[in-house]
Length: 305
Image (tube, rainbow, N blue to C red):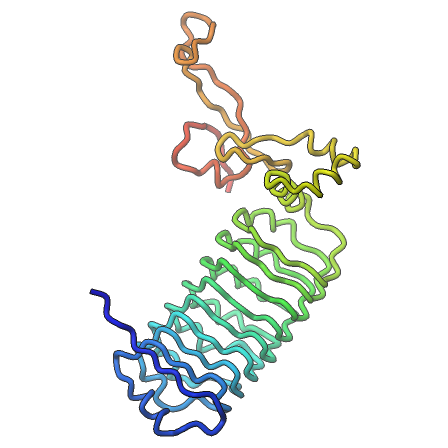
C-alpha cells in the first residue's frame, strides 16, 4: 500500500498567517511537499532545512537573494522551484541536493554559475534558467550527465561550450533570444536531441550534420512543404541522393558513418558461391557509435571513442 503524501500549501500574499507557517514547518516526516509561493519572502524561514522528508519545495515569486546553509540537509528533495526571485548567482548550496531532478531558476538576475555547483546534482533531469543574465556557461556543465531538458531562453549567451555536447541524454535544448553566433560542430554527438529552439539569435549557418539530421527527420515525417522546396532545388536533391541507411536503426543519414562487416550465412540465404564458403562478409554502414555499441547485432568493426 502506497502511503499518502502530505502537502502543505500556504495562501499567497505578503501578510501571511504566521500560525499557518509555523504549522507547516512542524509538518513532521509526513510532509513531502511545501509551497511558499508569493509570500514576499526575503529569507527562507527557519525550520525549512529541518524538514528532511521534503521532496517538492516551491519558493517562486518571492524576493530571495540567497539560500541558508541548512538547505544542504534536504537530501530527498526532487523538485525545487526558485523562479522569479532576486538571485544574482546560481546558489552553490544546491550541489548538495543529490536527489534533485527538476530545478527552476527562471526570471532571476543570475549572471554567473560557479563550476563547483556541478560537483553535485548528478540526478538532475531538467534545468530551467530562462530570463536571466547569463553570458557564459562553464564547460563543467557536462558533469550533469543525466540532463534531458535544458532551457536558457532570454539570456545573453554568445556561445555554447563544446563540452555541453557531452550531455548524451539531452532531448530538449531551448536557446531562443540570446546572442549566439554559431553552434559547436560537436552538437552532432547529441544523438537523442529531438527539440532544438534557436529563434532570435545571430546564427547564420548550422553544422552540416545537425542540418542533415533535421531534414531527413522531416522528410520521414512527411513534411510536404519541405518536399516541395527540395523539388525546386537541384543542389539539395544531389546531396540527398547520397543518403545512406543505417544497418542497425534503419534511419537515413548523410554525415558521419562507420564501416562494418556482417557475416551472412550462405546456405540460409541460398546463395550460389564456392562449396567451401559458409559465411560471406558483407559491407554495411552504421550512422553512429550508439548503433555500433548496441548489444543485439552481429556486426564487426573497430570503434574509436
